[in-house]
Amino acid sequence: MVVTRRPLFYGLCLLIGTLLFGIAGALHPVLSGDGAAQLAMVARTSGWRLIHWSLLFGLAFMYAGLIGVSLRHNDTAGASPSRAGIRLGAFAFSVWSLNILFMVGAGDQLARAYTASDTGLTGTHAVFVYDMLHPMGLAAERLATFLLGLVAYTFGWAIRNGAVWPRWLAWFAWVVAVACAVAALVFNEFQPYMFFAQGVFVAWLFLSAIVMLTERRPAPVI
Image 1 (tube, one colour):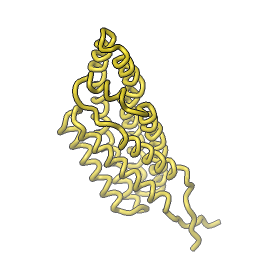
Image 2 (cartoon, one colour):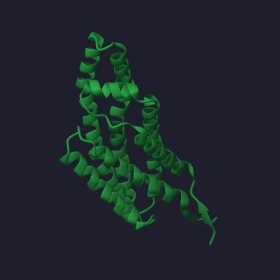
Image 3 (tube, rainbow, N blue to C red):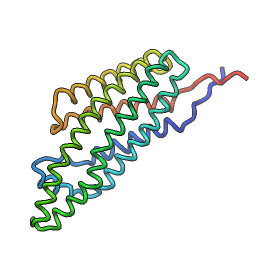
Image 4 (cartoon, rainbow, N blue to C red):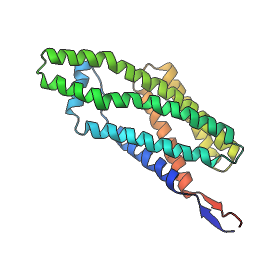
């Protein structure tokens, strides 16, 4: 039987996105302490903007790749949950980007203002603005983590019902769903557990990219 590979675009998008996001996430410092301490850490971090732009473009690539996962299951018994998953994903990825956008834009500028002000009035204002707005970004991260759990859950059913990819990938998706739900519902947004859950979600996407890129399918009969 003649076999052929599916187009590489979606698989490569998913692979590039997970690598971008994963490497940038590993390089991101763990922010701790009060607002002043966090702004000082932001200012000291070399490549702060590069890290966050890598995260943002990683999100774009990952969502493009996730579209490919959904399309792969269009003509299978997993079509309905895959369509639900990609629609949930649009909302989840949008919310996921909010805190990253804040930190690459306002967070970077506030850190510059704080360090350049020599702890004067401008520095006090910078810390105040950061303390008022950053919790909103963290709240968006918490909501996004819960939404990613729903995305993983629906795609788990798509893979399970579609039966075109390994069943273990569906089980891993459900593990991701539980991890994201626990991180979002049990722990508050000022703890790092939601970032760990997001990391597990990205790991699942990475494995999905490998499956997508190595898959062989029968060539259509002409």
